[in-house]
Image (cartoon, rainbow over all chains, first blue to last red; front, side):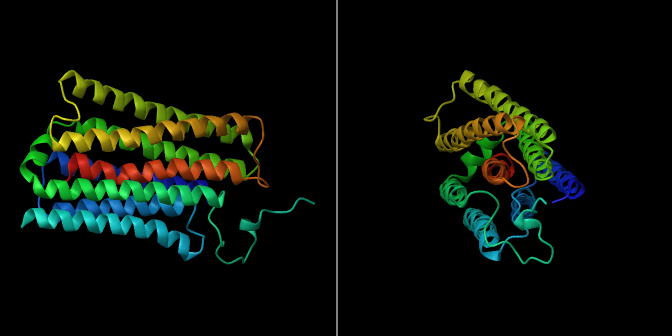
Length: 86
Length: 198
């Protein structure tokens, strides 16, 4: 992994964190806010897994395990929030 | 002539195993499973007490949570830069990046310490209500992982300064780095879930 790409990933992660914080500051709630927050969280987690953990060039099995965890946790959270909204 | 590490061989397909020791990845998966159960338990508990969770969430210090996110992400980046530097036989540069990562992790503990002090000072504890039972236990579980991650980073920093790692021996530093990134990954889910989502 070259340094330029790592620096780019850092900038994306910091911008995504600002977006998450702003959603909280504006007090936005509801299904769209929940989906946006989970999507931002998934994108951030994916970058950490692929670029910081170094799994981008590794067989899909390992990437799949970690990204699968991220997807499963996001889905469970979404289901729980959907139940709460009913 | 010095041989290149296997992972940098041109035209090689995807590596069969992840960076570092295989054992650390099984450990990471076990940790992620535990945190996953915790996150799901929080979300489903919230579904039964929506008003309480939304009200209590407003009493959290979101700025401190965001600052801690920045510290962990930056710390993770520093550690990734350290691994990259050591992989290019620049141990001293790698040690400096590790020191920066340790500083970020230490900053996280300080910020979280202030947050805990404010909550305990207000008389909040595990039995205050369901929200705070989850908030305190979930964040403290993560807090303990940050401490363990810092111990690992300090050991890596010490050994990297001594030149123990290099392009031909990345196993130790890659294993420790993977654990630290796991701590970051968990917080990336925890922050929006506990501090923001409502």
